[in-house]
Structures are given as structure tokens and as C-alpha cells.
Image (cartoon, rainbow, N blue to C red):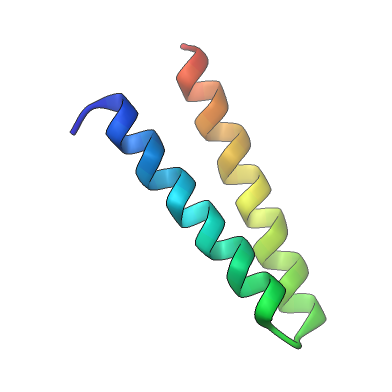
Length: 50
């Protein structure tokens, strides 16, 4: 798996996480999922810069 493939896979999972957050009625769970997606995305961007 190349770095690009890895980043594409990570981005797909981030989008899935955000979609699930948008679909849930549980506000606490939605906030947790959004924060988790944001943190993972930030780390992936940092990895991409290295």
C-alpha cells in the first residue's frame, strides 16, 4: 500500500465517521464522532507533510 492509498483510505473512513455522526440522534455520540474525525484528519495531514 502506498502513502497515497493509505491517505485515501483514511479519508474515506473519516467521511464515513462524519456521515454516521450526522445520522445519529445521540448528540454526545455525534460530537465524539466529529471530534474523532477531526483529530484523525489532522494527524493524517501532519503525516502527509513529513
